[in-house]
Length: 324
Image (cartoon, rainbow, N blue to C red; front, side, top):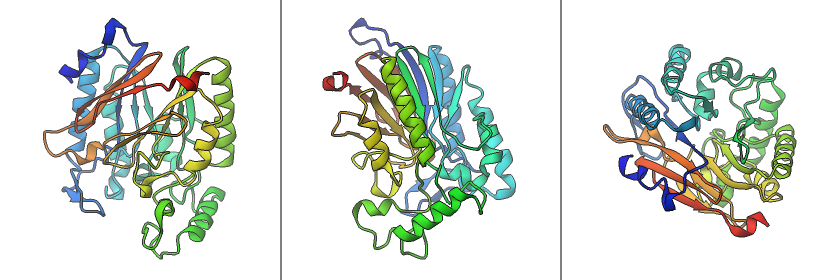
């Protein structure tokens, strides 16, 4: 990231703060494989990408925190190894000299149920949800959404959220294999079992957080494993109710950026309300010796992502109307 570092004080202006990010490590101690679409996956190499990321973040010495955008262990990890493999990857994140904020993804939940997974990721609450917020400086707030709040994976089989998800997906996807988009048209192709939705309680919580952020004149970065805008993502990777979530977000002018993982190729868009959407390239799909991680410099008027190797750098200037 050496050359990118020189850009971080554009016009001599120092960022308010910076942080590291990585997504979709999906480590497993198994031979390399391919995705459903035939894209190569480097299961053992991905932990080396993470190790190099942590080393870079520590060497930088000014990152306030790191965000992991989910899917730290792959679903093909042998289930008798799931617990130790998740612990192994979490231990690598813990080598960062500062706080690490984790999002949960579908592959995390293929390996461990929420009651085992969340304590390992230091996501603490009594009811098993994985949404929360934090404010690293007075001017900014980060909102972490739980995209598998309503999901057929991760909750006990008889849990109301599992049953709600199963009912929903059966209505929306007629295929026997609920991870198959065959016959689904356009945006309907998101109705797959490996995606999920934000539930009613979480929507109410999000509304309250955005109200408070508006009162405090904070700018907000929304983080969700599942992408929230079709312009930045494959249709098959979107949150089931991305439209509802974005409709709520668009009622406020405080949200400047939505960051996501899940769609491994990455993507970028600016939506109709001037909100930036950046989907992060996956660490899992890095051939030997290549990387996909980055860091972000945060300013009053923009957010700049400095990517390494396969992660694209992106300068995101805020829409002036959004502050009216």
